[in-house]
Length: 213
Length: 217
Figure (cartoon, each protein chain N blue to C red):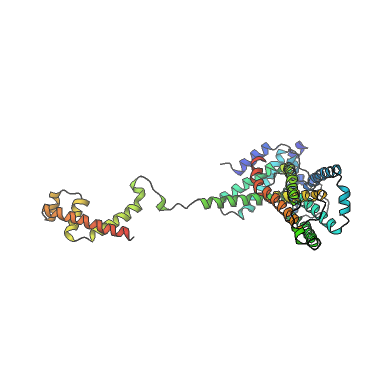
């Protein structure tokens, strides 16, 4: 029996079931009868019939899964879940009963399980946004750096001209006192006083901003 | 990652002959026959039949007893059928009509007793606590036996299977109790019977699902 069925194409397997003449001949009925015949042979240990059955039902299962899953990977994973489950409980199929209700019941169960698993993982996970990315290198934190430098630049701009020049030359451009004095035309003492006042004013401005964001 | 084609290849290579599971109805009736046999033996040993036969003269009691046993039978058969993919989910509703008759007949018995014995007699605790313990104790071995009977089916959706199985077991235990409970149920009895059945169903469903998943695969 096992050897013989290996040689049989699907249509011959369905004939081997002994369909009564004049029985309903719709495609779905015929397909169910073929699948039931292959499953019966598979339960008896016919590996070729089993391979043929699994290959034949896969497109049908893919359609079933595609109705519930949007992601193509979920569709394929669900199809594989169903095939694995079918394999595990293939002894529960009764050849006297139609095959499709048995298959669809397994399929629905596995699709529901995957939908539940996906929903649970979505509840645990948070979408990764640009502000969640924190790496040690400065370039990765460019958003944060940009926003802080803008605040500081605005604060410097709001200072009186003398203080602004002093803090720009000495603190931002990091020039020496002599170079800054030569460039701005201010004395070294005046530069020191202006820088001190500028830093004090900046501290006040930035602290005010931090308290009222 | 395994492709579906590779999976089919490996499953086909792994596919040896399998021993087909018998029809769930046939297995359900066999399970019930075993339980009935044990209960029958226990009632014969304890000489409980003469009392039972005289009580069955009362049509209300006969209806209650039949409905209790039918609830157990219908729920056990439902558990077996629901454990196999492709069997109608309408089996979930099979025990509901006899369960309604059981509760109705017991409730009517309580109502009748209220007039005979008054509120004090109907609310007395009496042997209700024993009945509660009997239903729980008798259900435990039956639940374990049911687990072994259903194990090969590897039910995919455990909750309805376990809930039905537990209801069936508790119903059969309540029916068996009638042999050793030679008086009409009082309000307290009915409440405790219902509590015991609910407890068995809730316990089996809540704790049975993770337990089954751990050991049945």
